[in-house]
Image (cartoon, rainbow, N blue to C red; front, side):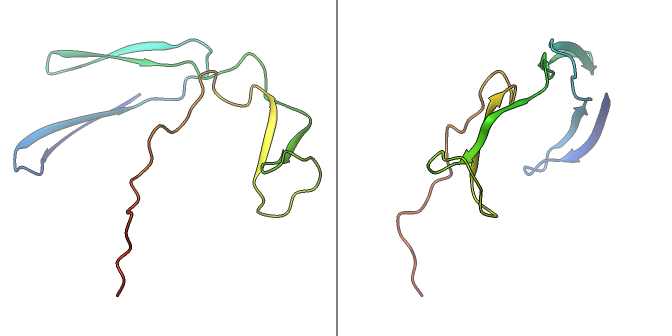
Length: 108
């Protein structure tokens, strides 16, 4: 693990210490927990498990056109979908908000 402390000035002009940390990827299936103590304050950091019980597996015929799910050749640059097992995290990931889009366009 790498712990970095730096002294700086925030956008209000206040002096402050900034502490950041990085850690190696967790290659085990279980989560791991550690603590960081800075200025007599202890912070607990928990990292979720990252490994799966088996390697990813693509189903037979599991690479298909994303528009109509038809198998076969794909054009260069085409969008596609992959079906199989152990292809991603156990807990699904998704987007819950999108950037706002203006409802008007300014013309020159």
